[in-house]
Length: 404
Image (cartoon, rainbow, N blue to C red; front, side, top):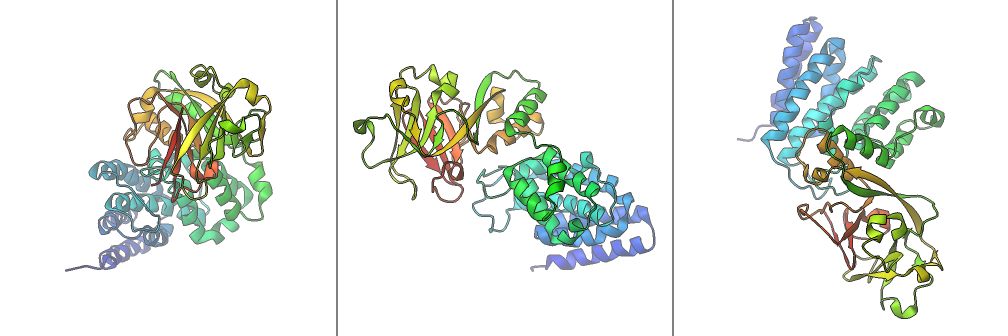
């Protein structure tokens, strides 16, 4: 017989509220732990968990924070080890069992933060942000670019009580902004911050500068304690003097060298990737041509452009930079690692684009070696229409794409 999950949760909630009214902190904490387990077993929708848990947490006061977070910290590895990862093909689909359990744990963690904000109590960042939520919501497991990152989900949850943050004084608001930016800076985060703190642009400018992805990768690589012997280049759209272009056309490329019926979509300046330039001594540029950039291409080829041909430059397109960092080779096979190596894996997967290293495929395992691999990039980064959350993979002579 099917049982409505709310019939299991409501009695636990009433018991908790009763102990709060009676001022019994010890019993309240015990009943809160029972409520967490009930939510987890019932696999409730995470937004319901969040709103309900916030309501019952608010009156518990400071006594809840440390033991409540400790309980969640203990639950996360249990949840992680009990079930294996499954791919998600759409953010609108109901969460799998794997996600249900993790989302519940994270939702209750977020509920504690919201309760602290509503009561204007201090924010203890070291206890509120763990690596587990980041690995859950930042490019894992499907790496599909469907906003399954912790900060976006965290902010959307907080926006359920947006009035709380609209009324926060600047010093309290800055505490949240600084914590989020230090934990998982991203373009998506900045967009969410602008929405959450609408009309308070001066406050956002006053917060410390968000470190670049390259800076974060470099710092995390050092934290692993492993030899960093593999160079990778992180892609970032910005104006610069290189010939790296999204779109655009090498002006000096002879007409007969351009594949018939194909469009140039990506030009890579080998001068910005010395390791790759050494392997292709007869070329200055690699230019990717595809047959259908607006509809998911079926055919692709990489044309090598000589130094003489490159002297005429690249017309049009959007320039991008490549930042060199060195990482441990082990990081490309560290999906299940829960330490710094696993966090580094997550950071690399979150990159908009990356050259060298090993490819993070969406439909295949990471290979042990990929000698011809040049670059991977999200479809949105390179302006291609590759279906839901598509990703481009470029080799020395060819390219293909996958969609989550």
